[in-house]
Every structure is written in C-alpha cells, then in structure tokens.
Length: 103
Image (cartoon, rainbow, N blue to C red; front, side, top):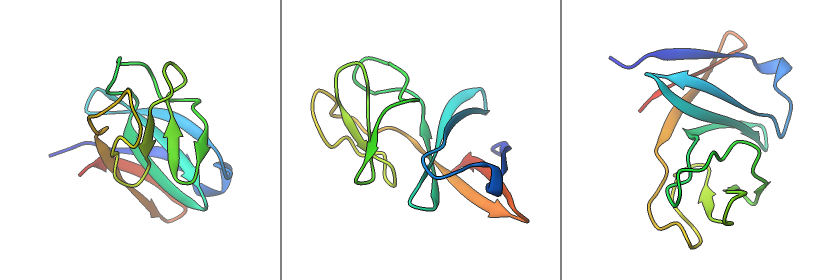
C-alpha cells in the first residue's frame, strides 16, 4: 500500500504555491494552480532536473534547465526536449488538509 502524505492546511497554501513532499521515498512536487492541487514526480524526464520552482502557465510546468513543459493533470511531456511523461500522484483535500499519495 502506498504512503499517504500530509502536505499541509489548504488555507495556508495559496494560489501558485509549490512545495515538495516525500511519498514512498520519492520527491513529489505539489502545485496549487487555479484552485486545484496537482502532484507529480519532482524530476524532469529529460535530464533528471527538479521541476520545483518552474513557471506554471496554462496548466503546464516548465523545467528551468532546458525548457521542457509538462501537463500538471496528466504528467504528459508537451514540448521537447522531454518526450517521456512525469509520473503523477493523487491529491486529496480532507477536513481542510491536503494529502498526496501514489495512484
């Protein structure tokens, strides 16, 4: 069974917030975008560079190293140089707390 990790109180994670948690010993990026929480492995599939801190526009996060873009909701690589998707994780809000776990 996958670990379920508490990220924090929903009301303390404002729009545009990004952070990292460990789920089953894997670094997972959590992003709040347009009121929703998204979670994906915190590594670009092109050169294993962290996605944390990348610009989020139109539901996509940009890797700061080489500019690859990934869709927050699916992890799909949307621009070169990345071609492989990033693994996504489940996010849940329960009793005002945000949680992340593997799908």
